[in-house]
Image 1 (cartoon, one colour):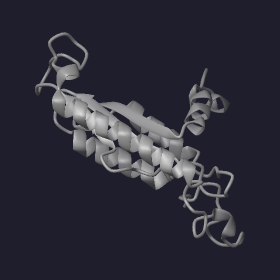
Image 2 (spheres, rainbow, N blue to C red; image 1 turned 45 degrees about the vertical axis):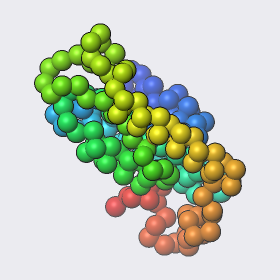
Image 3 (tube, rainbow, N blue to C red; image 1 turned 30 degrees about the vertical axis):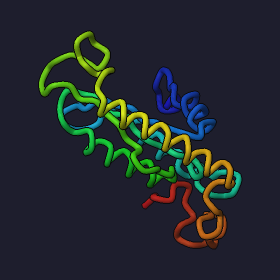
Image 4 (cartoon, rainbow, N blue to C red; image 1 turned 90 degrees about the vertical axis):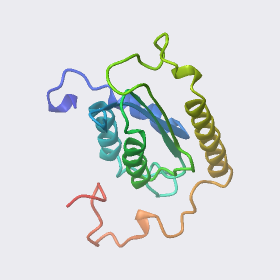
Length: 174
């Protein structure tokens, strides 16, 4: 964004770390029943780089897994997870089963997860789902790594005729 007048843009450094990782876990609080605007910005920045390809001429996020962790003090974990996991798989991430976990305290203003008396770190439901998510992300990432990622046949952008209507830097360009 610095080329558009912003004083700084931390995304290029963050994006290098994202591309170096086999596993991406987005985390967000719930705000008014939705994931945060910062989380939306991360999805948008990932999407902005969706034209990049990996070494097999697939979209850059192929062969990587993703999940999400949601916190807050109001209901909406599943709603937020649904939106985030859909966005991530649309970009090319592989989503394993039970790829989300979350903790919400009592409805309304109250303590955050790590605040004394919140019960967050001791919540069996949250701990179980976080453990399941973690193992599933690790197992699927290992499976993809060991098998060489998602098979390339049928999903290489380079195999489409260069003169076709899909020859745009961003595949969703209209």
